[in-house]
Image 1: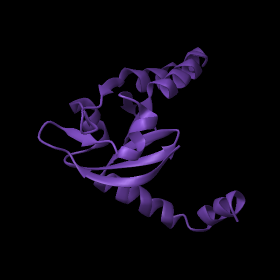
Image 2: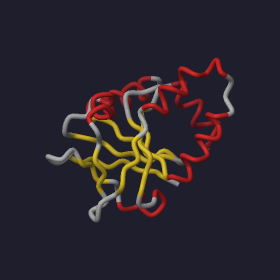
Image 3: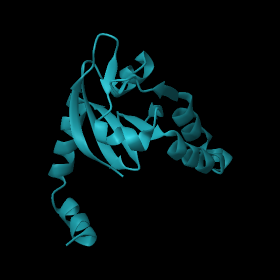
Image 4: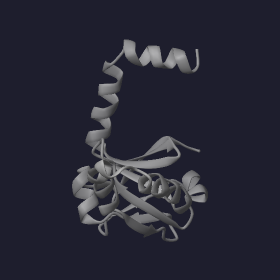
Length: 141
């Protein structure tokens, strides 16, 4: 399970660190693609991406735009010895990542956000107030 928030600066080769605590579960090669709902990137282990692909392949043809969008951005990235992956230009541009990135764990996947977009996402969620509290009460209180 992935959870937590980690802040990094991309280096001159556009590499971002994958947190040590995520690396064992992700493996040496990860699948990175665009999140179709938010301006960030999804990072999946190869095993988890295989499950996603099976579900995508079973979708009806009317979902083709969604499937295309998700799969056309896919890049397989190998973690280097320092646990970094290179973020290609098309993915950095989509997620609006310049140099500052936030890597977060979201249960079965990792997400990479620009620092600015992650801050706005957190502010938006906090501003929802009562709806968020209701969801929290249903889950754990």
